[in-house]
Length: 292
Image 1: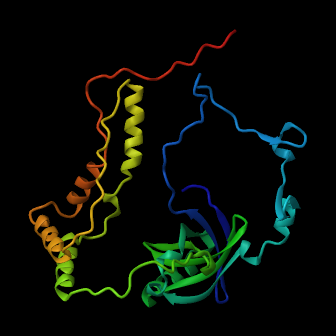
Image 2 (image 1 turned 180 degrees about the horizontal axis):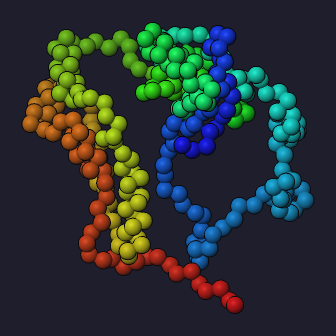
Image 3 (image 1 turned 90 degrees about the vertical axis):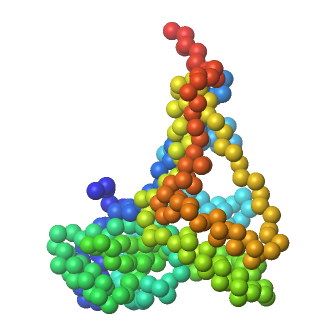
């Protein structure tokens, strides 16, 4: 397993157990370098001070908070360490709640919470008790220079921890959604049928990032001196004048079509680019040779 991102103690009543946090999910993206368009040389980012008219070294940089326009208070790393809360090394379960009571909008990042050797028994006890009571734990945790509310839930043979946004971080949208709209029962009935025709078991392995795949194909094509066939963009659809008729037509189109994983696979394939077999002229530029 990868290196831990946090080590400390998980406390449950008077029981304290040493644990480690490991990143549970991370995005994977094709990374690009910044190049000079003319000669494809890697460019460098520098930290420049306009007052001294020179480039600064990393050890000359400090963090500052602008408390008034153009005026800053400087905070040193040692000062940050002095104000770390107890949760920087000890995570206490403050309460247990039902999982369905928590809106997923509060979830931020996911981590595996693993026990040290000496904590395996109390850890296993906590996992089993939470599984049997159908409760999840709420704790406080400090890392990366901020304190989080943490959501702990049984996952496979252990515990998963999710950091959460605070209520004041969740944005409100007063004009979000609809109200005072009249819906006919016949429309609701057909909408139920359409939902059932699209129903499937959740399987995350079915899904992948078609944009990422297209970037990889584009890179491969350019390396081989080829171009790619552009994706045909979807045309904006107009709102149906007859909602019930549109629902019935949608339901009829679902009959005999692929279902489950095949439907997802087909939909994603439509968004992938193709590399033609015929070679196209390359547009890559060769970097000029440096003088000896």
